[in-house]
Length: 309
Image (cartoon, rainbow, N blue to C red; front, side, top):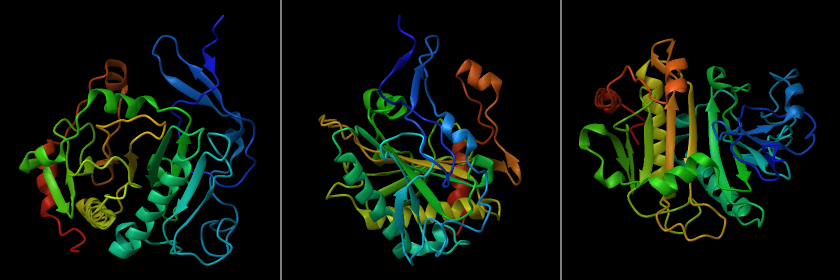
């Protein structure tokens, strides 16, 4: 009898964790009614919510004993086993923002993302590398120090797989009233059917499948990412909580000729201090209701000063 489990991993839920035992391997289950995959990781239930003794990401802390500019290391509380979960530190400055790094600092981060994509994706047991960030306690970040994470899956997770099979990404064809900005070979825009107010996507106009591709314009990527994240903080005059993730070409050895890098930024606020909650009707019905007109959101973001790079 099939009990809804198999030996490979699907999507996993994340929040930020650093200090504790790795525990046993993941227990992968599939809901036979919805088809959703859940990784049950009981060992993560005992992880600390906040560091007890200072910041582990500051120089001299548990995870950064020596000075660094950027740094990647294995997560102590991994959602996936076998070294598949990494933490990426953007800067030793605890109070810095990503856009405050400037283009040079952001370039160091995206170069590390590209390097870890190449290394993890080169493993025979890794089919997909997901780079992501949760910023702010509102979206589950338990440590304020600027950082993100990387998960290396042994299969292509459902969300990027659907996009690869069903979607065609054409940033060069985005309507001008949805464009937020451009830098180098990259375009940032608000999706026409945005689920989140002030949601932004960022992608290259060239057919680049992964950050690690030789033709990827990492300088342009650093500039557009710094500019977009600056505008989001400027929108309500305070740090914008957000979730960010990067879809890239799978590393399973397939061709994937239509795969293209795409960055998804989902801000959590719809007004100053007012979250945009996804509620029961939306999750239950699968149809979402956005209170901010995407074209208006794009115009508001365009009018802000940005990073002025």
